[in-house]
Length: 85
Image 1 (cartoon, rainbow, N blue to C red):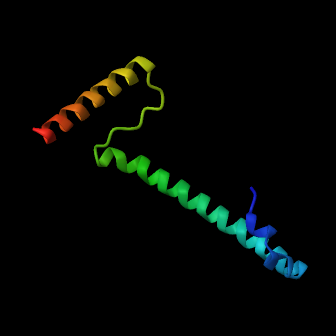
Image 2 (image 1 turned 180 degrees about the horizontal axis):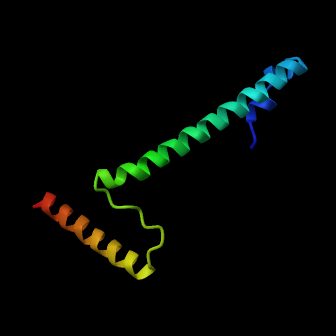
Image 3 (image 1 turned 45 degrees about the vertical axis):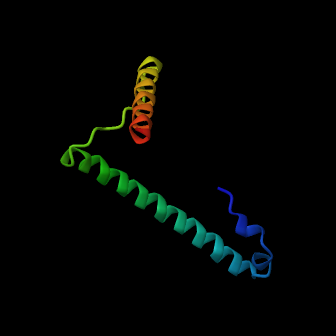
């Protein structure tokens, strides 16, 4: 992980102990955010069934994507035509 703030002038004015505290704070904050993200994803994994949502499919064949894209383009053109008329 790279933290740009560590290159700032204000960081260089801190004592060694102060610098250490800053790095520890950044590390702890990053870990906290990571854990919150994991909790959120776990909650969404459980909730999608209750909300009757479709689970994201990671792998879709290119032919299927082309078909979906063409259908979407057709719907967009139809919507544009409806607005013009």
